[in-house]
Image (cartoon, helix red, strand yellow):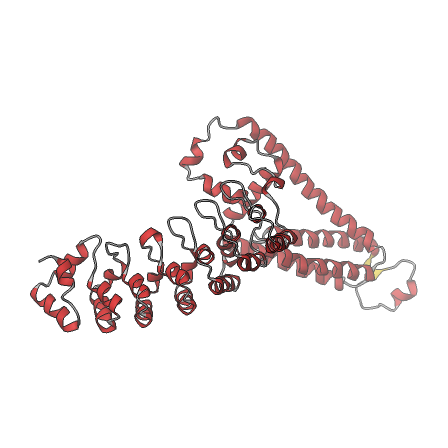
Length: 445
């Protein structure tokens, strides 16, 4: 019997098992059809929760099967307003909200377009990764919210992505807010095209939104607003975008293609950054942690030496004072100067070493500077209290460290110039190693 006809005969759990009793392979037969209205589709559309949960128990794969209209059971349940059943399916498999259906539309895209903020919240809490998905046109939930004039849903999406605290939260926020569809339009472009002025103002307030992204025809959001007419509201929005840093496409420098960047010679600065990045990537976490511990110990020891030099300083013109120091070790000023210079070089070098071992990221650099600069000043003040001429010696030590760094830079410069003589004649090996223009484009941006 045709499985599609059997599906229509199942209205409750008893009828389901009657069909199974007659043909134990009936569910496998239905599952073998690529696109079909399964019993789970029927139960989801009608809101038959007990039957839907029983089918999910027997055949979980039905939840991921599309019918001939490109809809999954979850799509149908949302379309028919079966909220209770939607939440029940969500508890069984949260990843169902990322299942692409017709035109790549996921259930999460569907609830955004329908304007169901409560379901949006439930979907985001159950499966945070759904915010990354785009349909076949490259449109994310942000694009869909703007296209359907869903202001509250747009607020919800922005509020969610701005509150993320996971490891890649910052990069995810940047990618989500500036994602371009197949025509190169971001959500801000679409809001400008459709005169969604409230949405434009809301997006402009987000610091992660790039106001100067060009679409496929080279227009920025400000270009689009200028082309919309001379209405007073348009001019107000234009002024808001300008004050926030928005520019026209003609005023921006012409972007270079990745192929053009690859054809240009590698400069010394790029070469140095590449070597640094390779060193960071090749250093294991265990090695990095061990070196950071060593640097921290050196910083602690040298800083403690600055606060409490061994035995004080011997002064030749203070014989009476030295007599009062019987039983203590007093250091001759010549040895103290040597110790001070060596100690200062070790201190500055250890701080620089810790800086080099920091993970990549602007946040780490600022936090390190916030801590290192006061520590550096405190060290300098401590040494100055011990000996007034310490500033000059400490500066000499710092200059010595800078000279060592400069020597290394010269060595790298020489190696870079020599390496330019052995450039391979083809770049086909780059493709074989998995280097794609997409990866390069991310690095260039």
